[in-house]
Length: 201
Image (tube, rainbow, N blue to C red; front, side, top):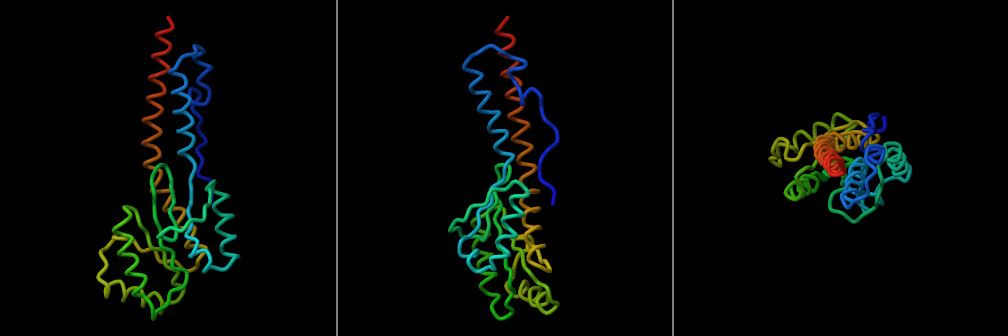
């Protein structure tokens, strides 16, 4: 999976002093805005410590490497979901069921309903490698009267694919919010630069 980095660099934002050299209080504000613009580009992944301890160490190593390759910081935290991603100023929560137990599905759906009431953006990723497991999920979905998209369930056939989908979903959810924040901040930075230029004459 490719890194989520833009190849475009705004020359004014990258080096505002190349356009404006006057020192004033406005420049401190501008530098803060620039730092914030760069900060929102980074992603943070919080992993539930209990969930971590239930997984094979090799899978945790895969997750850690995959996140690092995509510029995400990984923190281990005692949180309610299995994962919370902060991308572009937006928090996206995930339940990740790596082992589907056909005899113990009530716990999964009860937890999904509870967390859905707590998080505006919640996804449930399910590892369902066999047809029996997939059929069990479909029957249980209707048995426990889940509302379509509340939360969204994402079936996968292996756990590595499941985590890759989690990262893609988190990134996609954050892109719109991130672009909205960047556009607003860039406009404010340019306005302050123009104001400083006019006041210097």
